[in-house]
Length: 73
Image: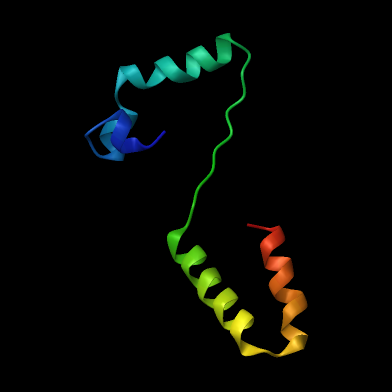
């Protein structure tokens, strides 16, 4: 769920909205859990560049690190 799908106002205005309470109340009443994930496009762009360099560099000392990166993606 992205903010642009929930509201067309800025984040601080959204926090004041009474409708914002509906989803957390529903989750609580149903005994559900919510998993939040934040993606940082800059971080993943840098990781992609480094992975590309490691894959093409040919230095065998770097290959073990390249394989480890795949485990955490």
